[in-house]
Image (cartoon, rainbow, N blue to C red; front, side, top):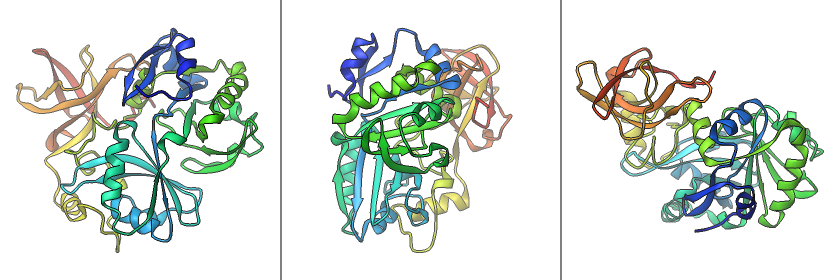
Length: 362
């Protein structure tokens, strides 16, 4: 298994380690997933996300390349802005979802999912019709997500940049904890606010120690991938490989807002997705919460009141905040409206649920 710059720290802290996307990653620490989840919601927690992938896109044809391969309108970016997007495949499915950073000066950074680094890199190289300069820096960048309502106060101690001026989905590059050229991005996957930090691996331990010293007064804790999943679930954020994949279109997945059909942007499968948006789709990804007691799990069937199958669960958990089962799943379009009654087939037990619009955590 691959390691991150923080692997030995996780082990020393007693984390339960497991393989994830080829990396030896912390799933949870001794305090447990619920405590970690609440720490992020109420204070500040730190995730090691150094396993994520980073590609540089450079040169005079960089924007043209992004317009060719991503679904969102990269031309709307300005330096310092971040954009959520996806890579559509030829059939209208999703190669991966990603975020794009506009560095200015014909320079962009794509941040992709850890499990898809090789797949995405091969896709980008094969579809680089524009002739952009591509560089895979995934092994040369470390990343921490410092998340929660106390994240700003924690990090402000470590930098002269005014973090309150970094708006949501924007970033700055500056010194943090005495380390130059750290990317400080107001982004995250928790819905609790906070920042993501990108830096050279050789500076990783210095930054980790400084962040934990700065956050000590706020009860800062390291957070594993288990709580990362429950936090994103409560917000209804998609997880690649569960809720979206090569067989699901962004229109089906409720990602029409990152699928822009602007003039001159002829991205992969544009005609297919444009037709889906105009004519509608036969299934949609929805959020639902349990009325009966039960926890939805990936792969469980979803049915109507008569037991007819109408879809399946893609993600599910017990909400640590709401204390009820919550889930995401694809259902026939006629059952996708909020307040629609659906049923979870839990090993033959029919459990009532209701379609709701995420987030589940208000």
